Amino acid sequence: MTSLTTPSTPTAPTAPGAAPGTGDRAERVERIRRAAHRIRRNALDMGEVQGQGYIGQALGVADVLATVYTDQLRFRPEDPHWPGRDRFLLSIGHYAIALYAALAEAGTIPLEELETYGSDGSRLPMSAMASYTPGVEISGGSLGHGLPVATGMALALRHQGNGARVLDLLSDGELDEGSTWEAALACAHHGLDNVTAIVDVNALQADGPTAGVLRTEPVTDKWRAFGWHALRVDGNDVGALVDAFDELRGHRGSPSVLVCDTRIGRGVPLLESREKAHFMRVEEHEWQIARDQLEEGLAR
Ligand SMILES: Cc1ncc(C[n+]2csc(CCOP(=O)(O)OP(=O)(O)O)c2C)c(N)n1
Ligand SMILES: [Mg+2]
Image (cartoon, rainbow, N blue to C red):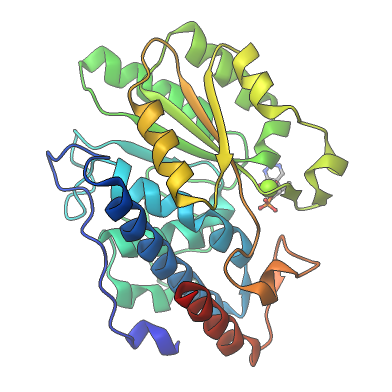
């Protein structure tokens, strides 16, 4: 837990009322890159508390979460239930470590609290639960539920005349779930342009590579066939993420999806090359190596 005591300067999240995704592009990209770095550092620190976990996913999706939380989402960190907030749903409960790392960066949960991750009595359980953690909108764990919940929320917001958006992060493994595609049909049927799905295609599932478990490609074509406005980007390229999110935010008339190709363990070569990457066990002496590699990556 060395670096939780390192001074960290979280990026000011999107100010209430401020237009998300505005400002000089180069400055935004650099700011998000630095936020993603801190999210990765937070995730490593939490991983060390337990010695194991879904660390590879957190490192892989950090650029996406940094873009969402420090550039795109309209929310108030000190008021997680503000009715005007954009809702960010984590469909994949096992990615909780990634979300906590981002919520600490966003200022919704205190950085010092991360060291309680997964401990008895902590507000940060190993699988994300809405009743425990400020800023966590839904309880995850059972895959394939995020997009159906997003559909209902988006319908209700539209009914109420609330202009907030609903973003749902799902995994490529969740494309194996029928409920995901039922919700995709419903969102398109109802023209829910307040829904944005983000699919983390890390090409991996618990039982091995996605291509071997159940073939889902071509993913983008499938979403388009279901009536969605779909883009696909390198999910570890912050510039590409910014451009894509900006484009999707302005889209009207149908729901949008951003398919993000990410690399598990991104930013820490030691963990990028791990064979058992779904649930990583990291030796005690490897944590400092991981942190050093992360810092070297930022310096490059
Ligand atoms: C409905 C349901 N079925 C099975 C599981 C068990 N499970 C937990 S994680 C996981 C892998 C799903 O794929 P993905 O989220 O892409 O894995 P990752 O990228 O994190 O390796 C599975 C099958 C579950 N949580 N919920
Ligand atoms: Mg996956």
